Length: 271
Image (tube, rainbow, N blue to C red; front, side, top):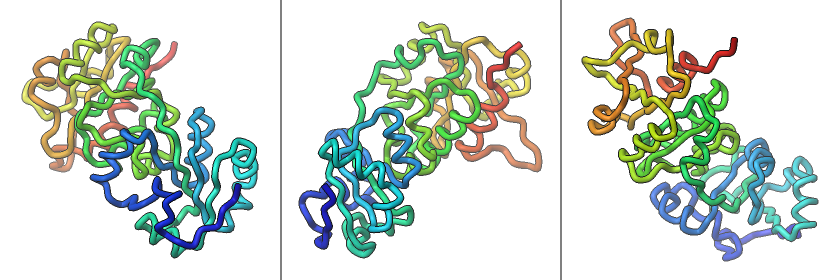
């Protein structure tokens, strides 16, 4: 099933065309039911999560490094395409530093209630538009005890190539789904037994230290979009507004950094 390619416009590889066009990928990936996994580690984590490959695209040397996946692809009838770096770069629009890509079948979204079941810590990413920040938040969530992530309708796609790469594949590890409509979804959280904490610079905000001293058993942490922060309606609907104590004249952190601080301070403890 290994096919060598020389034409960067080969129609069999349309899944990989123009991967740097963010607007195009956000529009077409969900509709076509695919996402792109980049690097050996990310591809293996996607497969371990049960996601199905549509095809692989890689440089020559990766036929050896990924020999077991190539063999499995042959058994399952999954195409493996191999090309020179300049052909792959002309096709995708970027230099393939990590040697291998996989076009993966996008899993179906599940309802929020399903990922909330049994969770005690949930992160809500409200309209975060930068794929790097989304990926970093997922990596922190996986490392710091967050059981599930909900993303709002206008939030960047966690399965966009850059989000997946920055997360180091943890987008496949932490259960997540979209919560729509929003901010009406605040009531979905509350109906499922969660207190809702919105992180914002607000005059009535309590310190993260105070919330961490006696947190609710089930807690949803809402983190807002870059620049504007959390929407007014969510601030009004939240059970508590929280701010991270700052020093050095700094008033706020990048949302990815803020998520790591919040997740660590409010991580579930035992005993």
